[in-house]
Length: 115
Image (tube, rainbow, N blue to C red; front, side, top):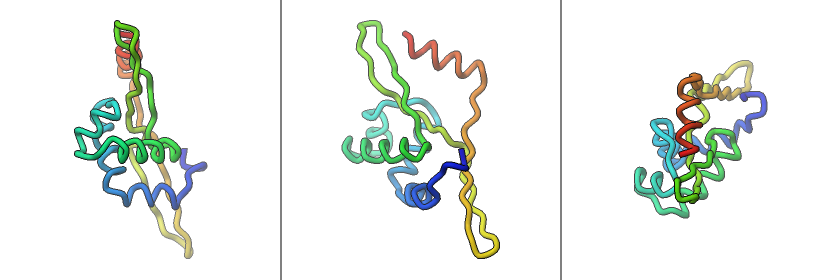
């Protein structure tokens, strides 16, 4: 993941309090935009803007959740577990390491998405 990362964009997002709060909340559990807005005490438009930016940077992923009634909506989860910034030889590098997901967690997530 780190080869394709836009260093400046990742650092800009990590500097944003709402983006950090979304990444933190979505690292605990998958959440809809409304749940994220409630969890971080932000307006839905603010959450949607940050979610779009975080997805574009590859830091957040969206998955569909389906209800028995046929209704579906998106839920978000953090796609990163570590960002490392290094300084050497007059340059800096940003490395983004993706969150590891166990087979059991992935199965549970997929199963819950079908319910």
